[in-house]
Image (cartoon, rainbow, N blue to C red; front, side):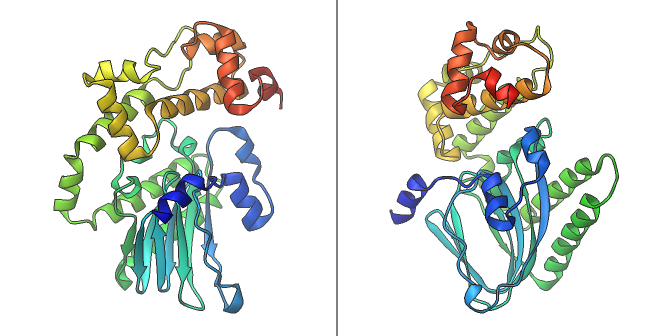
Length: 307
């Protein structure tokens, strides 16, 4: 019960706050609303500085290779790592690490959903499911393979190759599938037939299919939970329960967040006027769009565009 309360009360750490806390600087491309990726080496924790990482949510994804014994708190679960592990963190689940070794090493990468815009939905993978496996204890041989993928990430991000971020997305997928192949097939099969997860995955797929909006004559039509329920041929209450169970957010929250994400992209990276954007995103009146945007961003669409 204590963990649930911490989850409900904690404020998600944004990717900007992560950079400020960790490095006291901010990459320029965070301001572009087009996605972010970065990769780091874990610095050794020595002596009195080896404090537990706070128990909190982040609003970004993180994959971490840790060498050293640890205890990891994921929501209401505790996982002990005896030697080394690969971990997967997502914006929906709060967590904290306790490190028992005086020195630890490893690597980690961080990225947001924007980085995978048009490249799939990360939440369909079991390593990011609320009830999925998030920690994978590794053998020495498995550590070498995971470390090699991170090494390629470091090499790629420092390269001048024009399509390097496509390569980095592929390396993230390589880590995802490398971990998921470690799971027993029976576990994977069980997850595939879970009705709530299947309905939630179909809902997210339908939602994402409507984007990106790249033509002023284009308009999204599925904007409410009942719209999606009708398309999926399920009762709206059934859809809402399934989404809440698997994603820990309401259907309406997820729809609003995705529409808001697209609105920000169009305001920053298109020359469309606000009326055209409002129409494309399914608003019948531009005032409704203005009110929706201001409610979530605390700025009008025009002020946000000019910031």
